[in-house]
Length: 130
Image (spheres, rainbow, N blue to C red):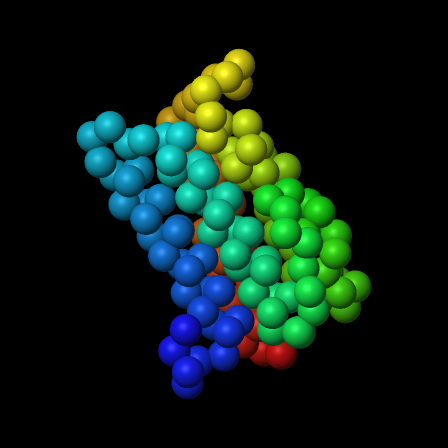
């Protein structure tokens, strides 16, 4: 971490890097939808966790975005609305390893990118005004 940068900003920087990586992968010929969706979930997870760090609140070490959101301070939840948390969580858990869950389609991949973009934007705007 940059010593001059608060830790919550580092969490947001990592969230932005995951989002930018997802977008870049989605533009390749192969697209790698499984990896793109996973990175979108990771971006939103890190962005949510940046709120906990901002307020110096311990957070659950979980990938469940709805659980993380539910554990945010009530005041925060009244001010921000995050989208697609259940869908994004599925991409962190169900598709990381081979199994019965089908790989995401291109439309699901694009939806995951849109959710991650909106969530990142919402969280950074919220923290910049606090």
